[in-house]
Length: 315
Ligand SMILES: Nc1ncnc2c1ncn2[C@@H]1O[C@H](COP(=O)(O)OP(=O)(O)OP(=O)(O)O)[C@@H](O)[C@H]1O
Image (cartoon, rainbow, N blue to C red; front, side, top):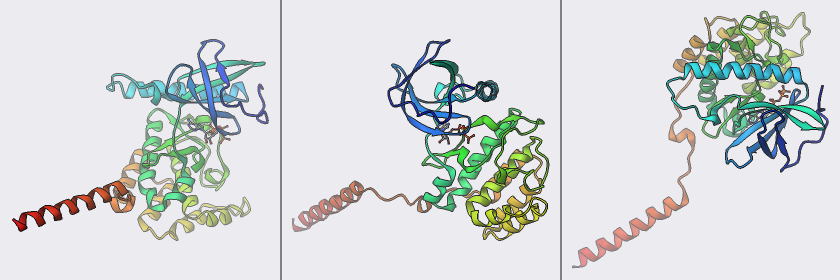
């Protein structure tokens, strides 16, 4: 164990220098702290691009995250070989090294995902965004499955959403190869917790967690009440009942199927979502306000037109 979660975070301007690879990253600010590490917004010294740098508390835990990210990186390269040059900003993993900071503190550098955690995004923008955000998220989950991994710890806190509704997964600490035991999960989102199936990582495990994520976003109190039941009485029927109370019946049917493990995989789950739940966002839904400068320009052009007409008709 190196470094402690209780350590004060590095202040802005701290240079995290890699012992083995020699690259230097300047800390801009803290992005967040979790059970496995502290994440900072950084710039590589002398460069303009932003990255997220995670300093781990435990070398082994961090190494397993790095291994997953490395596999995803090479899978993505194989799948996207047509995209000739890879943009380093979209890399899952840029590099891993040790920071000589008294002890050797392990760290890795990944893409910086800008946005808000999913629950904060939806409470600010409204539940009508769930169709679009859910589709983007399911697509990311599908790609992960295609690479042979399950995400495991799927919850709103591990999904960042941009202002335009692009959803990205963060924190691959719970990801594991398909077929192995899920190594990190959060009770409410865990199939085992609800006596709804095993903790073996299969595509259905993530789809179940996704369904709970939706229930939590739409009726957190209901889920909380269901979760407080004794382990012996806690069961999937409670979840199905909650899903049925949702006003959107198509969404309810999708959730029920995911909870029961009825999808053949994430491809089918995503296509069904796309056909029945996702509705392209319209300008009205986006609620894009007309900028004031545009209103003024329009008023001015009307004024000029009126003067022109006046002069034309006087002649
Ligand atoms: N790539 C990223 N881009 C932007 N912010 C990030 C990124 N990775 C992590 N964060 C921020 O840092 C926080 C902690 O990161 P992370 O969830 O990876 O840590 P953890 O120790 O694995 O947490 P947990 O206790 O949830 O397992 C996140 O909640 C998020 O706010």
